[in-house]
Length: 434
Image (cartoon, helix red, strand yellow):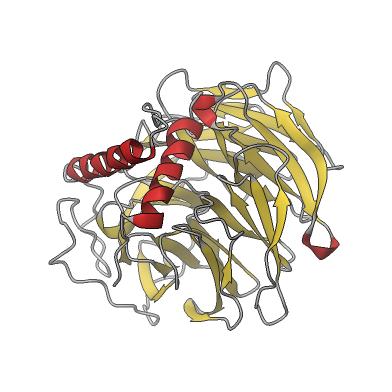
């Protein structure tokens, strides 16, 4: 399988990713502004991450269908798991699951936790995806997605996407296919289709039809992004109605929409200006409106982060409900809507969570008292979030603390931390749960 190059356009993207992840999403060292120097620094840091990963475990020898490596393998001598669509394990019956991907350099794996009735997480194990990780951050939202009893995950190290069936005590690989692009970082599933964002270079989106986890490319569903040579896209998302696909571009401050045809093919991108700078993560409400976080360059503009809310109008344009509602924090990059009433952002550089009331009108109003729903107080680096199906528990991946924290969502949207956080690999990215 093709591995990611670190030259040319990809190197330019690495620098833009550094700008968005270091400055906008809270890494300690910010880019210097010198393209070559920052590019070399990114290469050096990637090597350090790979060395550090040798000390990371996260394997579970009890996985009899796809045992994960112990974190010390470079992936060269380990066999890849064979897809097994006919796995006869018991269908999932847990209260719920919360899952992330390890994304270690070498063999990629899903790190899984069962969700107890009281919201607490218990380790289920680690399960190979059949693909490869990169050993670093992705700078994206929605690296995993769930539909029915199937999990879909990106493998950015070898440009593939995997599907795994969820059972009571394990995950089993069903299929793995090329994304027909480079460095997949985000995906979205709905209406029997899967759409993947390829983030390197000029970027692209690709669509697949789904049949019990088997993925087949859809004719006419491979589309470019805005045409910029390195737009640094952050997320792809399919509307709840399945008729519109949305992509955010951080480097261009643009939001793209694609009409989804009845056969799953995509129209040409409609390019819309973002209300605020550095649009990053977003999430749809049930009615098809959506909330977008705006990092505003992150560390370069302390306290400037904001969020906006939109709906897609006829023709692919955007109707704005609330334009760039500031939260006074730094590095707002990920968004989670809870109960269709609250929208939370992780402010990676500020180590805080901001809360917005999401009115029936879809206008945003910052929570009282400055909008800080939770303050970690130190170097936690909150990034991805997910919520339980009953909307009672919010889970936050803290990238610097290598943990997933659990919160109870109170009736008024206030967050109460629940018990101790659970440990995850230091390279873990993405979060999905139910």
